[in-house]
Image 1 (cartoon, rainbow, N blue to C red):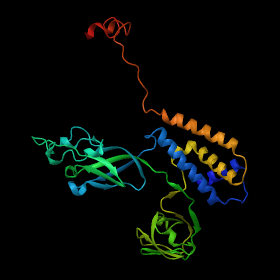
Image 2 (cartoon, rainbow, N blue to C red):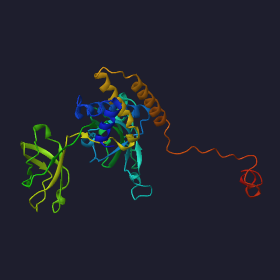
Image 3 (tube, rainbow, N blue to C red):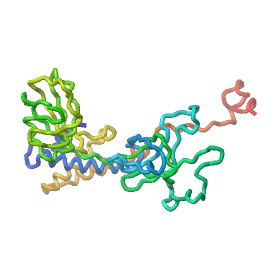
Length: 329
């Protein structure tokens, strides 16, 4: 769902339309607040509705017992060891299985002092348990951390909505190693960490990838990574966009059907500031919230199947003359 479309709908819903009383940046802030609330509704109604995956590999032992979580981590759900590995592999221990979450913080050292054996007699093994502390995933007991690949399933945080800045490429623009000149860039120190994505016309389309701005040397000169490839052909033409780090100009696809929630939320905020009535909008928002909660909460991956009945009339004589009886007993 494009941000420009949400802005236009919020202006229409609030009666603001083309009125310049609010600029688009202010409306985006209201839309973002509505999106954050919508994400909370999704999480509260069904924790498994919005899920991301984080793959990592440990080197084994205590030194690998602490793993940094993704920057958008909000809530963990399950952890697999040897993901996408199937039974029957050459090493039996390397079968996909779910690692147990530490159920009680006070039990994190239950294996210490040989209260329970760390290694089962006969060459067996014991998986560690895990928990979350601060922005880290920690295995307990630390020395039991295996050298293995893992997959963590988690609920991500809401990503802040922000419009991208687009400017026209100047014919003099040219990448020079890790540094790049954009005459119309208007860069500031706030752009450090942002991404700049050019959309050059042929024959320079190979340069049309996202680059991270590592330093702003001047309003027209930046350092980027990765280093642009050689072979740039001047004069340049096209456009380029700058996206602030940690932001997006679209809402998650799974939430797109409920984009009206952001629009109505923003319209209420706008009309509240303008000291206009919001009763009808608030009723609409509450109805949306109730509907979203109801639908999200009952989501089910597979239909329930009726239980098998082994008595009474059934498939006829071929199955023993009556239901599942006869020949099965």
